[in-house]
Length: 436
Image (cartoon, rainbow, N blue to C red; front, side, top):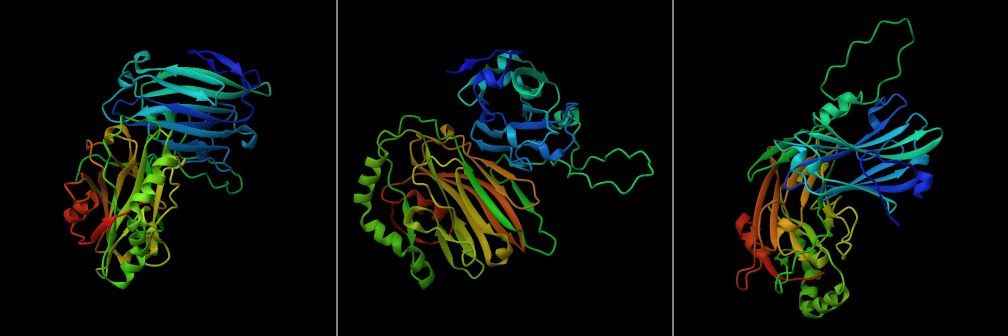
C-alpha cells in the first residue's frame, strides 16, 4: 500500500516499510522544459563536503555505488542502498533544476516516490518563478533513517544549489586556504563539472577534445526514451529495412540480413504474436557509417549487423533486448582510439513498435566521451514518420565533430524510410526488407 505524503510531512523508513535499499523515482511533467534532477549526499552539517556525492547527469553514481542514477525520458530513478553509504553521509537531498527561460511554475503534475511505499505529488502550480526545487530528503537522526517531503522552491539553478550546499564547481577558483604548519594535505576530491552541451537546433554542432596523447577513448552513444507512453498505434507501419551491397566486407555484414529478409513475413507474424498484450514504445538505435577508405555499411539490430568495436567498422551496437524494455535504453559504442579509420557516422533511430509519433517518445540521445561534457540531442521534432536521423559524428581533419540532424523520414511507395535516409546523406547502399 502506498502512503501519500504532503509538503512538510516526515516519517521513519522503518514505519514506511521501505528497508534500506529501494528506488527513488522522480517523475516530472516538464512541458518542453529541460529539467535536471540530482541527489546531494550531505554531511552532518548539511554540506557537500565530498563532491563525489553529488549524483547527477555528469556523475551517475557515488564512489561505492550506494546511490546510482538512471535517466529515462521524464523520469529519474535513483537506486539507493543506505547500508553502503559511509558514516560521513547523513542526508540525501533530491533536487530539480530547470534550464533556460522556463521556471518551476511551467511544470505539470509531478511526483517523487520511494519504491511502492511513499508517493509525494507536486506540480508547478505550487511554485512561482523559482529555477530550482528541493523536492525531498532522506536523513539519519538518532540512528534511524527518515524521509521528509520538502517541496521548497529555490531561486537559483543547479549551480546555485551546488554553492548552497558547499560544493565547488569546476572552473570556479577555490578560496585560498588559511596558512597552517601541518603536513601536506590530502588531495581534494575533483570539483563538480556542471557542464553539459545541448544541441538545440538542426545544424548545431560541437567539437570534442582529444585526450592527452591523442584519441577519444570509448565513445558511448545512448538512446533513451519514455517507454511507458503509448499513443494510438499507426496503421500497419511498413517493415524497416536492412542494407545489402556488393563487396566482401559488406557481404559478410549483411549475409544474415538477406536470410532474414526471405523469412520476413514469418518472423513478423511471430514477433507480433510475442508482443501481444505488450504496451510501450520500442525505439531501435543504429548508424550508417563510412570508413576513411570509402567503405560504407550499417550497424543495427535488424539483420543482426551489430558491428565490431575492436575491428572494422570500430562501431558496435550493444545487444538489443528485443522487447523495448531495457532499463538503460539502447547503446552504441565507437572506438575513439581508432577514430582515424572512421570518416562519418549518421546516428539514427526508428520506431519499431508502439508510438504514433516522435513527440510521444521524449527521446534523447547522449554522446559521452571520457573526460568531456556529455552532448545531448533531443528527438523533439517529427510527426508520424517512422525514421529519424539524429546526429552526424564525423572526422574533420582528425577532430571529432557532432552535428544535430533531426531529419525525419517515412516510406514512400515501395521505397523504405531507411533507403530515403540513405539517399539524403549519400551512402549509396542497396536495401531489402529486414526483421529482428
